[in-house]
Length: 258
Image 1 (spheres, one colour):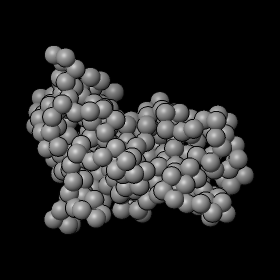
Image 2: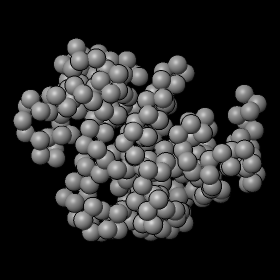
Image 3: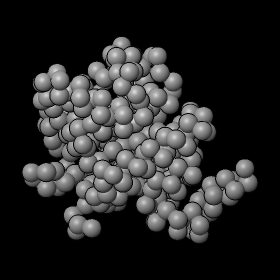
């Protein structure tokens, strides 16, 4: 493992008036590492994810990313064009609801191809070939390339969103409840796909979920959030098998009782 983290979060905070969204969050994420963030609704996990990804403006702290050319840089200090390019290349964001991450009026191939064209791809045949390749990698057959996402099931839409995000070879993927709202059998298939892609591509990822089974399968490390604070963190199996904080113990026991 390299000594330099891919992402370094320092004292990140977001407030909504007098209410804490998240506060005093710090951690390092290394290349190829997957971090899970869990907690009940309102714990601050989605606020933290969106603050890190630049979707909302934090009220304090640093989001340092190890850029390809200039090393660690605070993304909050980047220019808007720099942040947009980062979001199209080295970063990706998988939404819980695939419709939020897709162009629903554009074909499946067009959804994947758009991200390639945003980083400079211009040859139609090359873009289409890469779109076909990535649709295949997420188990969407080539004969669906011209279909719009509205013709797809929820699970297929989520797989298409993943293809759209990963086609440019990002180094860091933010995932917000990637299996939320899907049937159990569809969830299992999607998790297997995600686990394979993370390993194959050497991706770093940050996954927000309320489902402890998801983080056990995908995450190397785990942070537990309550009321905007990180109350426990460590290796995933260690935290889940021997939780130290009373809130983590409650989360784990509630799953075991189901």
